[in-house]
Image 1: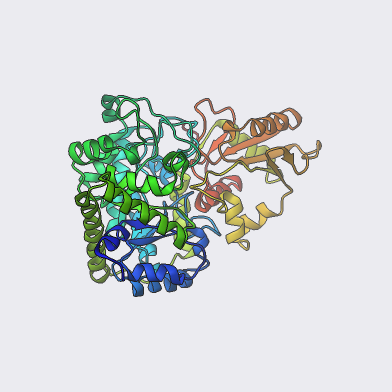
Image 2: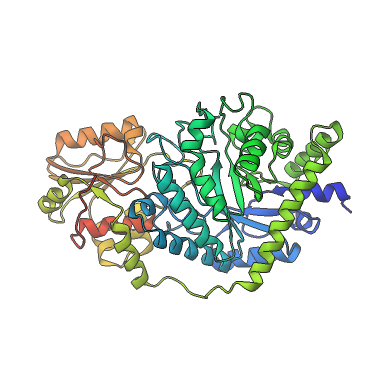
Amino acid sequence: MPSALDRVVAATLLPGFNGTELPEWLAVRLRGGLGGVCIFGQNIHSPAQLRALTDAIYAANPRAIVAIDEEGGDVTRLYHDSGSPYPGNAALGRIDDLAYTEDVARLVGRELRRVGCNLDLAPDVDVNSNPDNPVIGVRSFGTTPDRVAAHSAAWTRGLQSAGVAACAKHFPGHGDTAQDSHLAMPVVDRSLQELRRRELVPFAAVIDAGVRTVMTSHILLPQLDPGNPATLSQRILRGLLRDELGFDGVIVSDALDMAGASGVDGIPVAAARALAAGCDLLCIGSGNTDEQLTQIEREIRHAVASGQLTPGRLGEAAGRVAGLADMLLAERAAIHVPDAAFSLDELDRSTTRALAAIDADGSAELWCEAAAGKYSIVRIETAANIAVGAAPWGPFAEVGANPARPQSAAFADRPQFIAVENEYTARVPDSERNVLVVGRDIHRYPFARDVVDDLRARHPNVLVVEMGWPSDDRRYADVATFGASRLMGRALLSLLDGSAELRTAR
């Protein structure tokens, strides 16, 4: 029988797990007061299976937080095997229709409700001020704080209208980084005044919109706290997020298995330090075990015994999580979710909206006219960051999901070549005049730039499509889609087959 302290500690933990069914060790912990679980793509093989899984979680603990990372674009768990049918944040920011952004988020929320998830680790409210950012990019609504703020607030309102809690991330802003905090600890050497002018603007907006949770970032801000990343910093979480911005909801840590949080001291120590700093709910990782949680709980109890973590701070964290759980439980009963799915007509209407986000220079239209539908395809596979994962992307996702649609079939029938780091499956024959290159973040990878340069030297009519965040000079992006979701892939196919006009604004 868990003690009172054990239950308080357990209430702050949000682990992941392996498999598509609820493990017995996790069910036991949920019955003992575990705060909740985090669902990843590896836990999902169908909506019905996911609903059965979440039903089992709620049977073990009706007040459980069931979290998922569904950003509605490149980062998707519900569609990790087919690619997302939503435009993604960067595309929404470029379309710049706040009502549409709110509608998309409401649809995401309804889908999550139907499968039993009640906390979405979204939206990403980072201002993507660095075009070489390896982890944010198209997950951001844009490069200006006002636009990011407006769409972040709209997305929050839409999602929470469906009875799913939003989680604004990554506080106090991950957009001005050139490193991935999954792999290292990025440094943002900005003053508080600079942060107030840019990074903090969207967070203030979502707090005003009633966002229920905020996720920390594992980045170091030496001008605010030279010794601790944001996740482990009282100055940043309490002083800035709580006291200055007035946030009174649940602070969720980014995953503690990331190098930026636990690369030095390990996950258990990072967990205790995160609670002491002001985090309330600890996202542990994607494939945790019973033994890992035992070690984490032991370290948290040790921190309480040694005075590093006060019982009051621990109780405050558990109380906030419980308050969120009670609110979500009530909304699950009060907010009706229509039992609906996408139709092809709805997808086609979404395609029309997505087209407004695509940016193309004059060479794109000339390429389409010269190619006349006859071209070879080079698919450049760059490394997707850990947050995005290995979900199908772009037109290739659309071909896989809807192979019988005319655009998909025509695209799939063309000769295709794949280029990855240190390997190019085959060179496009020199006799081919027209080549389409499709990739993500091409400008950030020397091998990808080399592939494009070689193709341009050997073939007279080459079109390069960038489905990530393009560089400012655009040498490797004749067309930029600002997202590689399946929907953006479908929009690209509409452009290539001449059924939609190319947008030429830069």
